[in-house]
Amino acid sequence: MLRRLADTDAELAQIAASAQADHAHASVVTRAVLDAAKADALPSVDTPLGRREAMARMVARLRAQHRYIARSKARARLHALRLRRLHYVRTARRRHYEATPTGRRAVLAAIQEALDIKGIHDPVVRARWARGMDLVARRESNYDPKAENHWDSNAARGTPSKGAWQFIAPTFARYHQPGTSTDIHDLVAQACAFINYARGHYGVAADASNLADRIQQADPRRTPKGY
Image 1: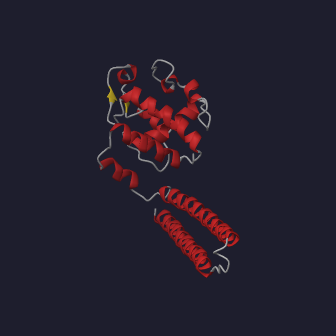
Image 2: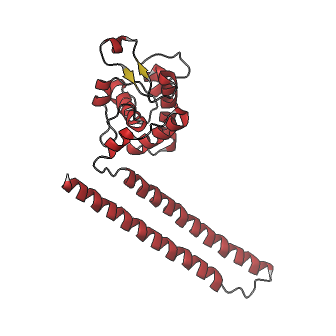
Image 3: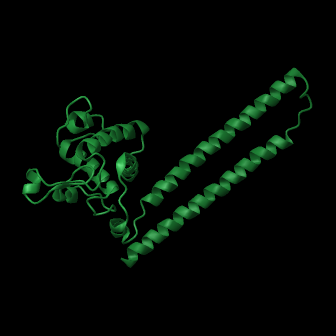
């Protein structure tokens, strides 16, 4: 346990150092662009040619700064993702005692976090997963992470379906995502388990291109059907 904590602390320190270095580099680059703009001599600025040349230089600087900003944003997203993947001991246990968020907004937020955890970053692919998982959660539980089904065959066997995506305990345990909560009602844990279950049991592609075909409950063109 202590070794795991030490490793996590070391990784956190690396992320912080990298973020600080990125920040320092961005400051230097931005200052260089501003200094270059201030130092730009414009002897013919009052002529049409001079104005065109000045405008061309300004456009070039703005484009360069835009590229720096885009790179900084990409690096910041990478740092945020690395931070989310850090797992300290007892994190999952604490979640059990926190108030469980409910409703569609909470479900959609959990889906986005689960996609981050699963390393799914392409916007088109994320949208496919989100659409299908949103529909399944609505049909299965009306977005209620505390929902429990006590009347069907699963309940008769002593394993009632629970949570927003209505997992029975054995299935949730089998497809549980390491590092997420072991509480079956936890939205992020269930969202991750759904992705794992869809891929492992139903053969859904990583890009979710066949999600609606493989799982009818995720297909808005077809009637609801348990999965």
